[in-house]
Length: 276
Image (cartoon, rainbow, N blue to C red; front, side, top):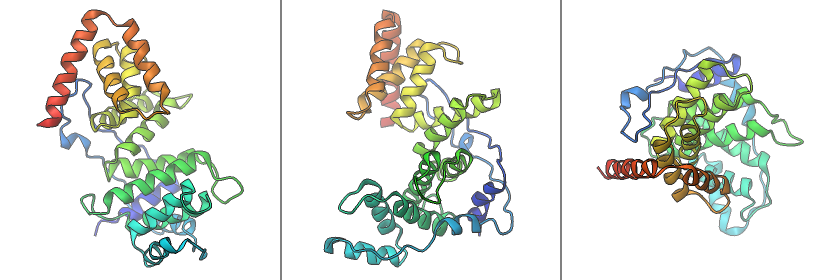
């Protein structure tokens, strides 16, 4: 059995650079072989890192309709644990409690880190790692969970590389790209992860990549391609993501007719590629 659980938690012993995947900005499919990320070798005893985070969860009263979910979660069912974690994170039918959410997500990650990326529960496991990473970005007030950017990076790295989770790839890209003293390698890793997430349809990644390409932000300017990505992102943006719509509107206002025509052609190519 591949010891991925020990592998990811070995990250806690020190930051480990991860080579990013290749990507294209033109909407063409990415070669799956380009997305293979080498995983560091396991280190003895490192699995205890998350075991300490996944402390036992004290029983709590839930509405009757959720009692079966609690029973399944306590029995180790990852789907039930994910549902309870989301309920506590969002205050959906229960009192909002980020620490309880964190603990349920930790249970999933600790028990299923080695599951195959093709397993039925793989997306839930990957999402649990992403949720943990986001908690580590900000910390949980008045709790043992403190803000820890490197720990967040470790969570995102595992979900991005082993499970291929697009949200993790986007979050990881932002960490590399937005580090104040980011090196050239940091930017390269970030751009690669951003490109891969955008190719998978992660609309926030598409928006950020579109901005960077259209404006020539540390990348050679490619206005038509940037506008294509921004158009895709705008179509998927949620009502509260005004930054995406504003970025699109600014780009359209600045784009030439040639830029718009080329962007439309690229967009048609993208849509056709997704259908195929």
